[in-house]
Each structure stands twice: as C-alpha cells, then as structure tokens.
Amino acid sequence: MKRYGLVYKVKKESLKDYEKAHAEIWPEMNEAIAAAGFRNYSIFAAEQGMLFAYLEHNDLKEGLEELYKTEISRKWQQYMENFFEKQESDKEGPEYIYLKEIYHLD
Image (cartoon, rainbow, N blue to C red; front, side, top):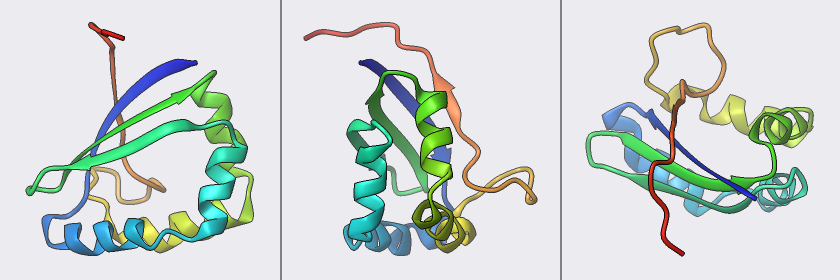
C-alpha cells in the first residue's frame, strides 16, 4: 500500500457542517470507499477550513476512478459540493493539492 497526503479547503463558514456530514457519513459511502480499495483514511481539519487527508491505496488514481463510477459516490459528491472553496467553480469536488512524502517512521 502506498501512503497519500492531500490538502484542500472548505469554506470556513461550512466547516461545522462538513464535520457533521462526515460524522453522519452514509454507510453505503463508507462501503464504496472500502470496496474501491481505500484503507486507513483520515481527514483532519484546521479552524480556517484547511483540510488534510491521509489515506492508503495501491494506486490512488485507479481507486478514485473506481469510486467515482459508483452512484453513491456521485450522490455524495453532489451533496458535498457547496462546502468546497476552490478557484475553478465549474470543477467537481475539491481541488486537492497532492503532497510528496518526505519522511515516514513505522
């Protein structure tokens, strides 16, 4: 499994609702994430709306493609769409910045 780190932003005023949505994530969405091969997936938040996601997957691009094929993922993305702060308003989903791993200790 490869480790991935990503950062993205939600609107500061939407952070509490974003947290609530994930506290009440649809069980079918969790199942779809796991079925697409994602493991050890966590999201961390700063008060300003900056988010950091950590996850493990054999191939992130393949996993995302597999996940986005599911109807439940499309519904979830549509539900979450208004939370994200982004430069390109017509882009679906968050605008991720992919981080390069420079250190790891097991």
